[in-house]
Length: 372
Ligand SMILES: NC(=O)c1ccc[n+]([C@@H]2O[C@H](COP(=O)([O-])OP(=O)(O)OC[C@H]3O[C@@H](n4cnc5c(N)ncnc54)[C@H](OP(=O)(O)O)[C@@H]3O)[C@@H](O)[C@H]2O)c1
Image (tube, rainbow, N blue to C red; front, side):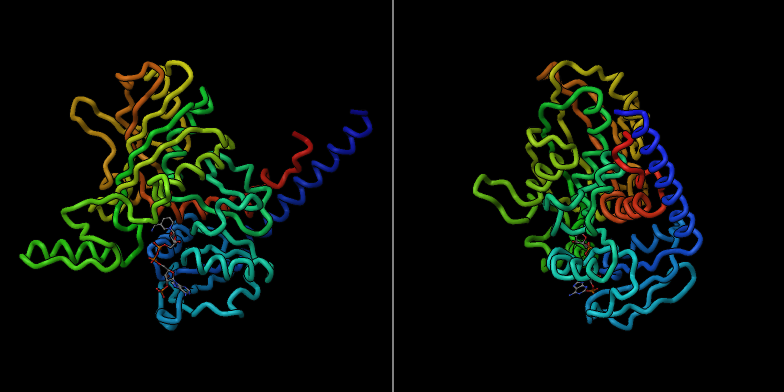
């Protein structure tokens, strides 16, 4: 490269950083017009809490849900806000949409939101595998967010939790194969599913028959393989999400993964047992050291007490709790670990807000790729 060109690029770079910083400062001081689509749901409630906790710069907040909820009120930072039914006009003047109203709604409405000038961060599976749409876990592939064309997808909750635990080790020595079993809480299926399990529990304790409407079978005092649609190989959609989305996030299409997803009668926070096979042995001590330094991960293990990550400890926490890191006795190149993570928080709402922070208030992500 010619010296003159280098100088030009540097000027361009500095100008871009300056512009990005100006934009960030302006956003931080003036705030964004934000809409939560699906505000009355399990993820919507958590989005409201996290936006407030992280002091996300908001000028105006619009709460959207189905016509069923129109007119109901929700509280945000001491203010009472009225929920509106989703409509054509809903996205006028909106800068950022945080969507959690399911795939069908996202598929239909997010392109309209983008056409109206908004950036949309989507919690549903509608756009995750679209090659034009970045699929982002900020601790793993923040740079992917740069390439967005209006929509950014938040990965599946079990995938986010697994990627946080595997990525810090994969960076040191690429994983060859992952085998995961999940233990997924009721709230993963939404606010009404959580209520259903509570009612089933009360019914069974009162000697009555449990009623299952959201789930296909009673979940209280029971468990069953994840009830999403099965493919011809016998894998359900949730399992294939873990396979395909992890490959996309890691930028590693050949990664070998097999998943078994199970719904368990826990109200909140998913757990996972993960077997990671590498090309060569990976020392347990080193793995613990890497995980202890990894953002979004907290190593939790006290072998003397048999104390390891549990959903009750993970609930309400930003970090995914990882422990029981040990050598796989059946394979010298494999490690085992166990995790619990709040799937409504880091598996959905927090991850979405972190992505919003990346693209709006963090100048470094706006720097041009050519200077790297
Ligand atoms: N729960 C989790 O742990 C989790 C984790 C990761 C991703 N996700 C994804 O996030 C999305 C929401 O999940 P959730 O658990 O929050 O579900 P939820 O508790 O059932 O909430 C669904 C939300 O969507 C709204 N909605 C439904 N139909 C609508 C319509 N026709 N127009 C506008 N809004 C409508 C609901 O409004 P009403 O109250 O008016 O019906 C409610 O606010 C799903 O795509 C889910 O796969 C969930």
